[in-house]
Image (cartoon, rainbow, N blue to C red; front, side, top):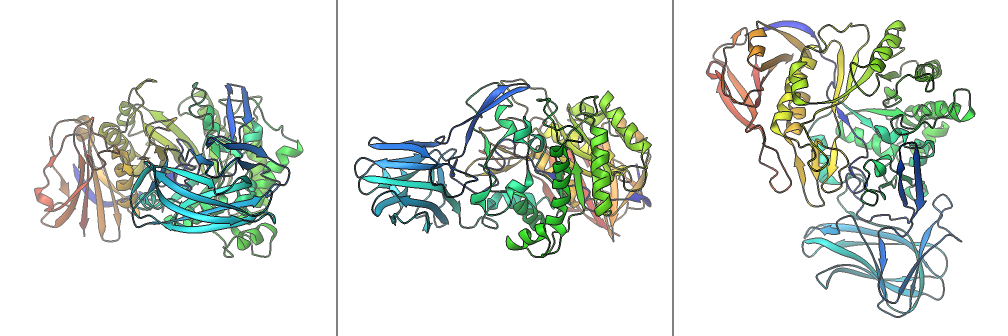
Length: 631
């Protein structure tokens, strides 16, 4: 195999990025640092079946009262009308209390600080209450408050944990008989990024150095019903005035009760997503609803010409103003009021998530209307189209025919392709993009290698699946003149709360687990240069299950070598790079079934070493290897 210094094609800046969707409790219960579940008493219980979904208000979900405590939901004089419900707590005697489920219970780390806040008002005279964390019949944190009867007031304190607490109980107790109303009860680690994001999860994302962040979905954008579609305007402003919504993934599995209360508090909304992009150094890529609920689950939609469809188009235009408009524009002023007077620098917008053309959906017409309206006002915005839910099916073919027939300047920047496929598909399709026409770029927006699985045995993140993805990504990198963006999916999953697997990062309340697939994504994000290099005579290596790509950034050259077999293999490298120079070698290897888990997070991790280039003659079985050299 001959490694040359001949440039094959340029590589798009920030080619490898992230796709975030609120699935698997990735946001509430995950990246959103809020520890209280159903903090504003607005949750729904959801269920049904395809085309027939329901939501029932269940404001007491996650909350439970003790003996002598009566909990009811009220709405006569709410904190804000947009979230009209609140909790009325009547204590028949002192010591009565109520608790919150808090997902798996409260987790505190010794020495760390935690911010408690809530709104409350007494219905009678001033009432005294205590708020605390209990574990094993002892109180770990405690604060007493005097609640006024003069309307809603916000109460706050900061706790410093004196010890580690796992599965702690959040408890609010009455110091005397009486009735107190509560709303928007919150407990977060004081080190939460921007006061919003769980620090260890945010850091794990930053370590990937993503070029872009696609958000907020995914099917969450569409919803299972048209009324549950994601509306970005409801996600901005102060958190207390963001209208809660039920989550499309609450009804993914036919097991009513397990996920039926999966809701969206919108404590993280579009403003916070843009802040996260700045923290990550990633270009924001929000996805707009085109007036349709999820086509897999619903036939609900706004018809073209309807005022509600026109409102969806206007929402896209207003979103661009919110992100980029001057501080004296309507939506730019809101951004400034929220603390960011400078524009966010939005350059890309997704039009629809995973839509496909049918006589009823008329998706192509929808896309064209969005394109014309957006480019009339914002000609520089790059639009991302949809190729449907899969590659190589009739919807995919129709989509590409549509876009290629309109390959005029700026009609579509890139077309979003999705594939969740077996590992052998990935290794067998490393040349998938070799023969693609080059006039319209590709966004490999959702991909993952799925091992065989069933309902009782969910697909795992094995080293074999990660190596297969690496092999496929060498083909994507070699075709970086047509594939300009790529992102794995899904990104996050909370242990015990997953509707979909495998996932790039697993976590629970105490730990974060980077999977082998995570490290593969990191390899390609960190070690792909600005121009792709020619690699000659690699066909024989591919017959042996070895896949390769090479790129350059300045004086650095990155060579990726993927051995998809379980046997160590001899390797013969020659050409412009061969010689006596020192190289950095980073290797991810092991048994095909190896995987990281939360009890053993470091089981599969990359190993870095310095070697002479000429000494590199063997590839470990089932491995991904990066060679970094200076020229």
